[in-house]
Structure formats: C-alpha cells, structure tokens
Image 1 (cartoon, helix red, strand yellow):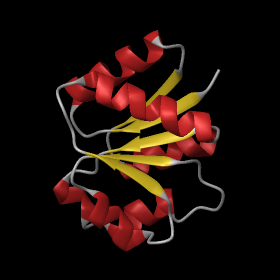
Image 2 (tube, rainbow, N blue to C red; image 1 turned 90 degrees about the horizontal axis):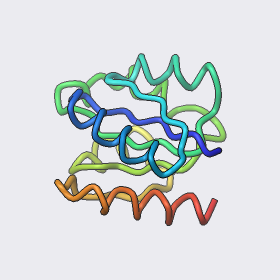
Image 3 (tube, rainbow, N blue to C red; image 1 turned 120 degrees about the vertical axis):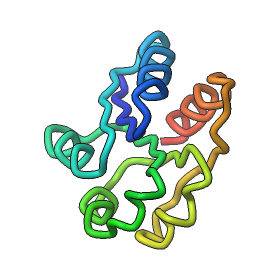
Image 4 (cartoon, rainbow, N blue to C red; image 1 turned 45 degrees about the vertical axis):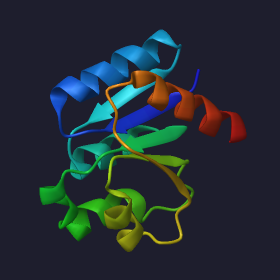
Length: 118
C-alpha cells in the first residue's frame, strides 16, 4: 500500500483529500504545518507528498527547508499557486503543480499518474 503525506493548512480540505485518497486504497498521513510534516516524515518515508503551503507559512524558510531540504524525497505534488514558494526553497526538486479545484478527481488522477511513474 502506498503512503501519501498531505500538507494542507485547511482542515476541511485535508479531510476531503484524505477521504478521497483512502477510498482509493492509499495510506494517508496529514499535516497542517511544515514542522508537523517533518515529524511525519521522520516516522517513515511517504511515497508521495501533496502540499499547499499557506502564504503566511511560506515565508518560514527554515520550516520548509526541514521538509524539502532532505535527501531522497518522494515525488511532490504542489496543489495550488504555491509552486514558486517551494521552488525558491528547493529549485532542483521535480514536482507537478496543480491548481486547487473543487473537483477532487483532478487531484486523484494526478496522484495516480505520479505514483505510476515512480
């Protein structure tokens, strides 16, 4: 079973993504802040990370570096207009950027595509 870490500041969206992806058979870990995400990664490497950093937290470079400054990270899906913020912290990280949508199918299809390649 593949494990996905969802880093999402909004509780309702975390639950939406968690519900949809767990129904597809994925093991889901959630975090609302980069420090919490770092703790989850320390417990075990996820197969995929989905992230939407809130604009107020994007400025906390040290917090995000603790997550994205690691070696051998799995693929990352950026779910919002936050690609520039993460790219500035980790410009060499390959990732897929999505525009956040009310259509959960966009995210689930992206997850399937990315995990099929890795």
